[in-house]
Length: 302
Image 1 (cartoon, rainbow, N blue to C red):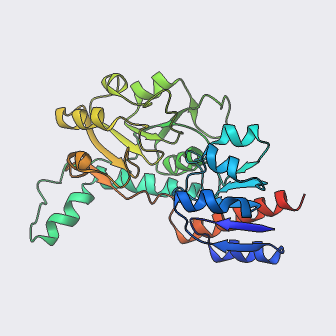
Image 2: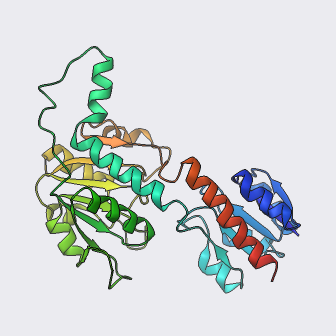
């Protein structure tokens, strides 16, 4: 059997697939090339770049598995794959710690002006007075929108820092953690920090828009390490400019790489940004490669 790895995989994953007796082809294909080549493969493993569309699935007459090394499945037509009886696999837990740590890192950054101090001191400035009004995370209320694998890891770290943690997730109604499960409205209205860990449902639009921001505490801090579009960038920029939101941290964006229209938000002095690297740690990538390889092996060996 042949496995196409379109967006790369860690060595441990490739070796596992080969040890299982599969031919592994690691090659980045254009959309047109993918359509022409997919019929030659029994499985495809992608990350976020390659799009597995309805047309790709139709052309993949031998496909027995579609795998995504990561959490989100936005780039795969999951419903159509299931309609065709093709399992869609992902690695929801492999990168949870890495994303959670980045979310917490961003909270520290904007709370103590790290993103500004790092730049200005290298310019020869000494902004001691300007940045003496930082805040502690301890004692603050951390609100989580999404309480799956990543949300729970963020909660653990928030609790360890002495934060009060509340969370909303439509699919979670109990927890053994010291976290209070509440409604989405309660998270929005009562949190000092709001961290999002939920999928983007395109048909519903942003989970956080102008209406939701207006209901938040004055001076709230918003962190999005989930998906671009979960928070309306236009509404967020307006709220940063009028002071409703004191700071924001973004690892994901509505358009990636960002366009000229997004520069004002990215360059805003009270925004901390990273280029969609939440899952990009050495440890997480090894776990992703190992987990997705084992899941593909299990399906193809049946």
